[in-house]
Picture (cartoon, rainbow, N blue to C red):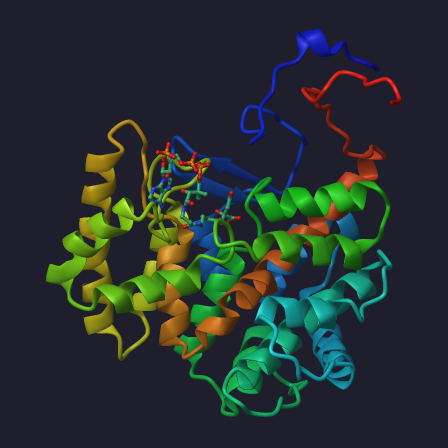
Length: 365
Ligand code: SDX
């Protein structure tokens, strides 16, 4: 069906374009609601283990009747295979670049086992990169542990507490899918050419790496460190505005009210001991930031997004700042795989139009 360009309008951010029909998640930006496969994100974050959320989101593409217990056992087995295939992280590259190298070792197949292997490699490589960031060698997985429990154990060398496992679980499940965000849309574009799941997931990770997208949590902590004291917040924020800097953890293309995931993660954070003071400080900075954003952009609804409390949760779990984006990928890989499979099922390659505004055709000199 070819369409004459004269009838089309340009939208470089694609925000007015519905590029896919999906059964995976709905992001209600006006109402501040996120629904994943029929469940409110708060219900998922509180009540679903990582493997249960994976089975739910993959029901369409690899179901029906995915058995959680079988997935858990197979994922544990594949973490061991992934550990034996880890690249050596010698170069001083960013952790997301090293994670990309690890995923590049995964075969470009699109069956359930290959998809699970991508999830396993994300978790094992991220834990190893957490050790690498501290100058420590990687630790082998434990096949008797669930995914989140094992990621924390591989990263810290000790069994995590139940509260810590629940907190990581809540985070990875909360970020597992979120409509056609930049990294998921990228995944669908690559999948639409039938390049294969590993290529699609690596492309998604490359998009997630950007500070405007999944690269924001680390800079949230840098901002809190730079502000230092709550009474310094207003001056620091105004200076940031003058520098043309954006406040990491605030604003969103779709949410024009508070991102519902912020409070889902804040609840998980509140259940972890040892950070009541830090939480109170972060809340004070958040209040000042929201006030200053509203004063500077009265016509824009710049609210707290998922990354603000993500940063605090990962800090409370003693996850090194360098691997925050890799940890984000450990959750979002569930959605990337499901969206890739949804796109392949349409049989359509993603190929929008463009409007040429360059020089008119030049005769050969
Ligand atoms: C994620 O899409 C998703 O679903 C993403 C995500 C997911 O789950 O996949 O939710 C995850 O990426 C969350 C966002 C994490 N990024 C950050 O926290 C970085 C800071 N936020 C901004 O860069 C920004 O808010 C975006 C990128 C998130 C959204 O940008 P928009 O909607 O395109 O808004 P914009 O860039 O058009 O900004 C409009 C105005 C600009 O001012 P002017 O150039 O018109 O003068 O608002 C300003 C911006 O400078 N603005 C900010 C700001 N966000 C927007 N100013 C200061 N601080 C901010 N955070």
